Length: 403
Image 1 (tube, one colour):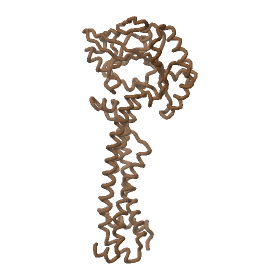
Image 2 (image 1 turned 45 degrees about the vertical axis):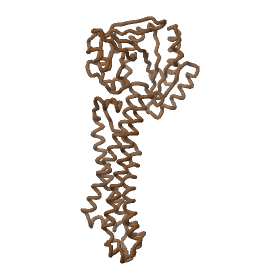
Image 3 (image 1 turned 180 degrees about the horizontal axis):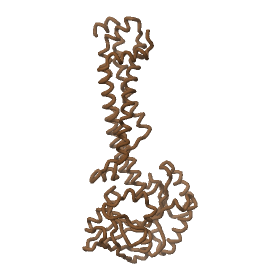
Image 4 (image 1 turned 30 degrees about the vertical axis):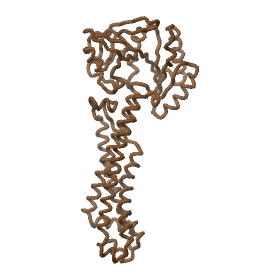
């Protein structure tokens, strides 16, 4: 008897048309499943990257609600200096980004008003933010100067464009009202629902409005998302005596990560359905192929092969066929991934709000290979074993007669 592997190769080459159809089916199924996983994980990862860039860094420190009762700006400024010093000791001064967040009312030149969240930032250090909130018109604010950078929703509500003057009014300590005239530097596109009614001014401008050198938010970044929990623990321990809350991006995300989870579960459900459909399609095709070969199996039994040997032979053929189709699908999928990843898929309108990002980038993770192998190899093996076992329950004469 020939060796099983040599015989498996021979059998595959004897019926190239049938095996080519099976290989193409597995290839197309694997490619569709792989690309769907790239996009599903890309959507989820994109929301997280958006959140980290725009909202929280990887670790986010903010003051507790009880600090709203502080009426003395000097007390708040002293608390800010202490928190910033502690954070600098933990991660290094250059790793700490500060923001001053407050609610304000904007008055447009035509008398239109809008209430929104304002964030005082240091534009020179907000490189991630600048890469996500790309100007739709105008430019981002400068590090100095009385300028404001608005979402397109607010700009449309105020009926203003870059270069127009806007008045910002807010309540500060002791219910004092401060106001300043700002120039609209630019308008950023709608990239996520949590920045629909948001504006940015420079940190010096924000502090001038509050008439005190302070911040109420501190953003820290880790080299990778996996280090966020450990850094959160170190920072929380260092600031245990301060009225602050320390959260990593998972806990700080709240609503934003809820959107990410909803989208992920939606696409996982889609991928699961696709997984089942792909697997059943492959199993059915292999099963039909095995049943068509019943006379051949009967002949092999007649010349001395045993049932387990035939099962091994069929499995080798199926695994060779599926592996070749999967390798081709993997190579094609990698090329598609590289093509999409170079530019991403531009989203607009409802899609931006649904996915929480302006540009969808695919994502590749190791688990995707396990899903692909299970769907293709596992179901191909199942499709071969079940009909083969049924055929081999019969004796040789019955198999030849049925064939």
